[in-house]
Amino acid sequence: MSIQWPIGLNLLHPPLGLLQRELIPGLADGIGDLVRPGPTAPFNHVNAFGLSWTFFSVPAPFGYTLGDPRTYHQRMIQLSTVHTDLSGHDTVSDVLDAHAEGLYWLWAEAGPTRVHYEIVPGVRVQFFWLVL
Image 1 (tube, helix red, strand yellow):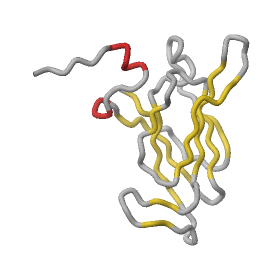
Image 2 (cartoon, helix red, strand yellow; image 1 turned 120 degrees about the vertical axis):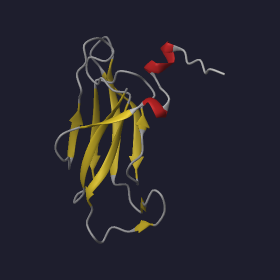
Image 3 (tube, helix red, strand yellow; image 1 turned 30 degrees about the vertical axis):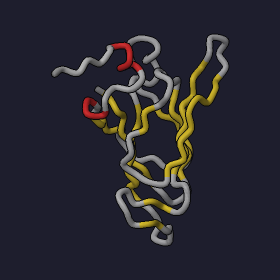
């Protein structure tokens, strides 16, 4: 029995098993934006389906609950996708408050202009694009 997956649906959410992580060089902290330019719209700003991350360093006093994944008591990072409309207005289209690492975050709308991050002070993050 074969499984049929409409090609158009791959623009939003391909099956998790088809995705792979692509390292974004360098460690992030503080506030910033991520882009991965592609050849054509809507992927000419962020040419990826989502994002994953690992906490490279976390201050010792930060509390967490054991489990898989380990869940920190406070938000460690806030991520948002920003889309730009035809008039040039930027709008936040998706927001994620992350208390854990290693998750695959697939945004709701394809082709954001950028992915904005705000990381709690003292934490350093390694990001990965989710691509086919």
